[in-house]
Length: 191
Image 1 (tube, one colour):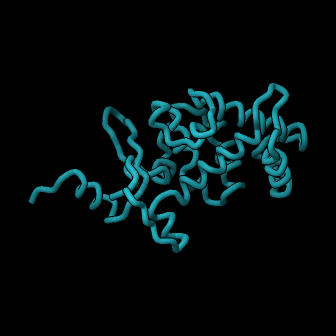
Image 2 (cartoon, helix red, strand yellow; image 1 turned 180 degrees about the vertical axis):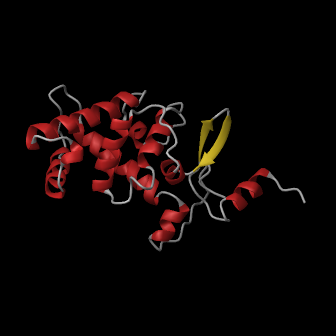
Image 3 (cartoon, rainbow, N blue to C red; image 1 turned 180 degrees about the horizontal axis):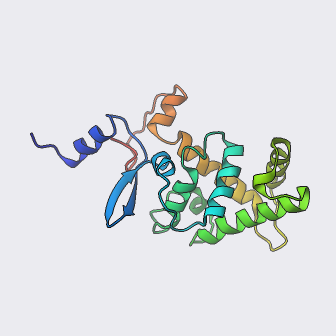
């Protein structure tokens, strides 16, 4: 029995739909969800391990479960995409491409703010301190001394986390909301 590409992918995903990203590993390609890429510790291509860790710490504080869902892998993968094909929300908020400096400056700004307010880095913040930091960067107009807009970074990171956790048909299912797209989205989001 022969099957077409669509049926192959559908069966490979157990009949469900998910955000699949293509990763080049050892001369071959793998289609993985951000969650799978996180679980398999797929090497980062754009972000450093420290930057990815900081993004995970912030995103998990904004939306518990975002780190395990692969938010850093999603962002890292999308930072390597053509800006026109990129799925990061930053492109819709007129952040000029390439987007890596925007995320890098956001992480650096949050690390500096954590040091300034609490004398520790993001990883050393307790829950109360993290909440205070997020409240600060979430205020419109919050900028670093260098002029980087931390409130825009907050908005983009929060939206990216929501996309990874809830932006697929499975995410809608977790919320008990029927997924009723007029046209199923591209990029492996559908079976």
